Amino acid sequence: MATTTPNAAAVCPDPQYKEVRGLARGLSLLRSLNQMPGGMCSTSELARTCGIHRTTAKRLLETLRQEGYVALGERDGQYRLSRMARVLGDGYQERAWVSQVALPQLQAHATQLLWPCNLATFEAGWMVLLASTRKQSPMAHNHALLGERLPVLQTALGRAYLAACSSERLTAVLADLRYRQKECNVTEADLQTVQEIIDQTRARGYALSADVQNARFSSLAVPVQCDGTLLGALNLVFTKNALDTEAIAQAYLPKLQALAKDIGETSISWIDR
Image 1 (cartoon, rainbow, N blue to C red):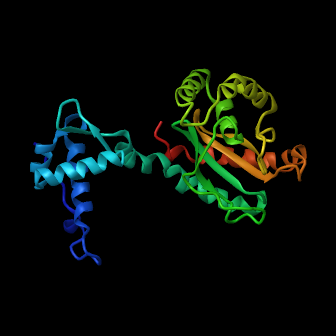
Image 2: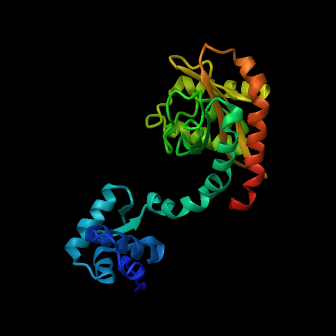
Image 3: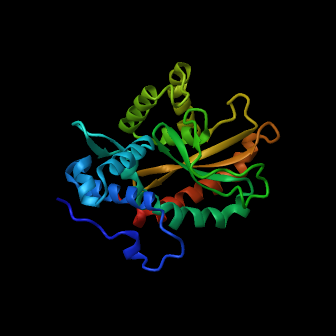
């Protein structure tokens, strides 16, 4: 049987607020499940390990399952950790380069870039927003939401990312997008034209989203790479049709490319390759 870990009260003996017992018990179940072989265990054993009544443990586990943090195991009454629970711990290490390197550099260059700049990475069929200068940019029309999911094929961020992928990685990403077509709002027409867009992006040297219909803004984007590891993409957002794309690229692309290069090179000590 796995050993138990200290509870919140032991870590913080004089809490300012009263403990939320249900939350504490749920976290205890997750910790215990994480220590089990393969991250899988029966309800009864988890209840004994955590000192919780079996019915209570079952109710908490079902709540965690509905929220996506655990899933049913191989046998009746078993539960296992889901990928969502596992990435809770992975997230800090994976995204440390964002908080320690990318965000400070983005903020330092916000005035120089003038237009809002966003950093995103590919995750489960979307480009996920990790950092933004929209709050610092005098030209921003709205504030980006960190964690916001953006379409891969219709955004400059996604196109820059795809264009920077190795052939093996690109094949895998496109296969994943095809599999996730419905949940990622990817059409068959999108998939038919994606290679042409990638070829254009590679030939141009940067990605554009000016061709996307019914969009108020355009953007150009470049990849962010760290010693051969593709981290994500960096874009610059500007008002569509109000500005000449070539003029924007001439004025700001070198600055954006230099920033992406600096972020990539200085992130090396934070990346687990």
